[in-house]
Picture (cartoon, rainbow, N blue to C red):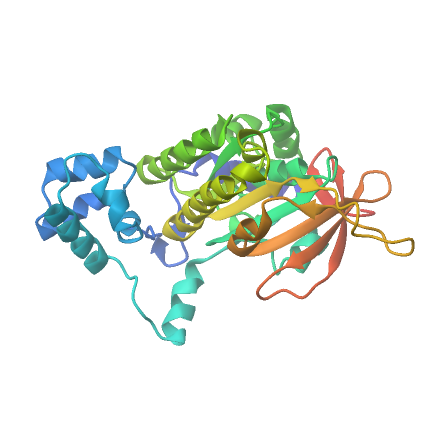
Length: 350
């Protein structure tokens, strides 16, 4: 009976996702629309040019480089300076005390993976306003975790979710709607509603990825419902094809830095959790007879520094997988065993 009640509660939540409420009333969005800059004397025509270039909020303008704004056709030096000044005044991007920071961070949330012990290792789940990178060899469960998170993110907070929609960018062609259906049914929610709340895009190149991130920011501003999760599976898929050899390595890393910077800004601007899966490369000279050599994540130091939390996955027995905290600013190094099943992921042995 309790299981049926949970399913009924989840179904009701999915049916009314357009109305998102906090404990003390309607939830406020963490950004201010760029249209509000009209109150500071910026004309509508210039604001339209900014929107067409992908700047939909005051924060996106305040975070931008001056040269990027100058590259927009029709904006002079004087106009750009005026726009930047107005955007910075309307955005809280200056110094705050640690106490004020703690107050601002109360709006952050965590999305459960579905495996309790894995969530415990992650400090409660995948955190918003941060980038979580999951890397490992093929068949380690990276894509399965992404599918599971995409369904759980839509659930109410009492079930480990965040009452939000999902943006899913697929660079490898491994997204499967039938898995979303399976996981949704196991969680007790409507499969059609779960799939309607996932906005999907197939990505083919690193240039295409940059463009999709601009479009994703526009969706988060213009959609009536709030978004909770942005998934890129996998982040390095296009880069490894578009750039080859050491001669193009510098160009690749600079492009990767721009993409990661955009992801970081989106996560903080819209208070969403960003989850990246990542590929690995072999390290032939890294091991010895007594110590195995684990594959290394690709992307170099650029990806390592931008990722808030890095989780390494490796294969276990049967359907079991082992997750390990590889890098985190606040979590201790630890391991957790989970397994893949029809309903997503769960504790190993459950």
